[in-house]
Amino acid sequence: MVTITISGTPGSGKSTVARILSEKLALSYVYSGEIFRRTAEKYDMPLELFGSYCEEHEEIDRELDDYQLKILKKGGVVLEGRIAGWLAHQHKIQAFKVMLIADIDIRVQRIVNRENGDLKKRKIEMKKRERSEEKRYKTYYNIDIKDSSIYDLIIDSSDKNPEEIVKIIIDKIRK
Image 1: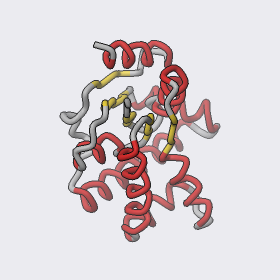
Image 2: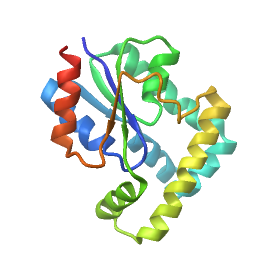
Image 3: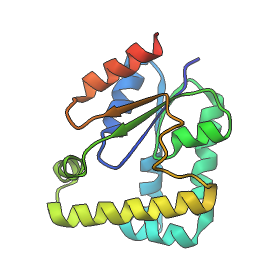
Image 4: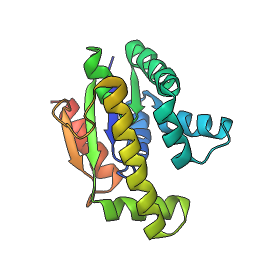
């Protein structure tokens, strides 16, 4: 049974690629970012404020990550999340780990296209979010989110459409 993790920076195309990949491979799809967003709503906080809040409340991240671990251990899934690949790696769970990267200006434009807003403001929000995540992952799990050495495949999505990326992943898995 294939288990695939899709990790990457905000706006790199993780969700779209993971959704298409899960359909093509007939695997379940789990989007950890949606769970985080719903939890932020439950706390009645905007996403960027909630990330900062989580810096002081480790239990929130731990709960989400325990949920992801259960999914990874079960297998047969495409799990999309910032540290999904790292969770599989640290817990020695067999998974094909993919990292998507892209130029920051392209990522910001994608987010604005998806969620609206001002480019300059969104870029500031994105950088703040990335700093918050980097701090939390290092503090809670000793993960250097910028260390890509654990991934089986790293794809720059800046100049590729989601279907091209999915084809690259499937071709690599089938080798």
